[in-house]
Image (cartoon, rainbow over all chains, first blue to last red; front, side, top):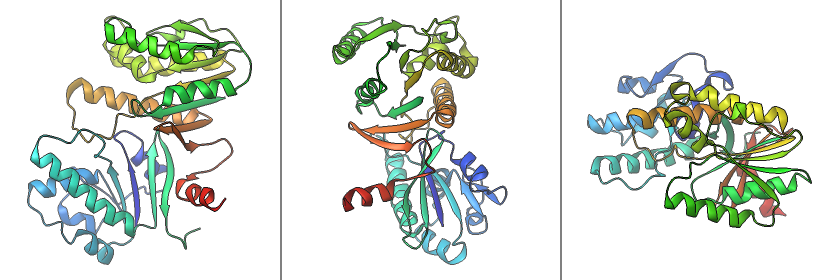
Length: 131
Length: 189
């Protein structure tokens, strides 16, 4: 599993497409069907996937264990959402908390976590056996 | 040498950028200020930044837009502060580049790069609030993201400043930076 994170408009998709070489097999969290995450090679706008899942009451409690079982090599691109003022809207607060806790679980299970800033990736985590 | 410095507001990125200019050696140091000064808050902000630059022998040029026509002394060391103001001016000031602001900003910065010996560019991290902005704010964020990505690709160095601490993002001659290892390398010393 690979995680690519960063603020909005930091070049996450360009990096995954050009540098990680993921040219096809993409799902878009903004509009894909929920089960597509188990079949795709990579998903971008994962934060929108989580948002829609919360809106539709789609069960996310087993998302990470299910991914590890069914699609362990997936590459996930997500915005970081937690750097603003805590929103007054309850749903927006729930979204940030859920996205955060899911991404903590994803990061724990990722072989490598890239963080994008100004179009440049840095590695902020990698498994010890990875060179 | 082009060094892109980014960070949140109040992160200490300006002071870090000024230090970087001083470390680039002797030469004509030019502080290129892009903020519009039109109210009390901006006057105070300018005073604060001028105080910080005292003793650092900078000449100040105030220029809110259209950098591609600016006369920059050859071989100078320029600090551009900052891309987020420059973009806002280009986009929202009447009669400026508006929807063509991305190329106006990039062309202007490349013009300075051609003349200056060194250029330190300050930009801004405003992309991680998670707020789904609409209208022109969204366009502004997308434009700033595109410009930052372009500057990041073309710069020799990129640094993110967090509470005054410089976090290396890109260094000349190095590949992808492993921030996880930096910590262990420092801890091991």
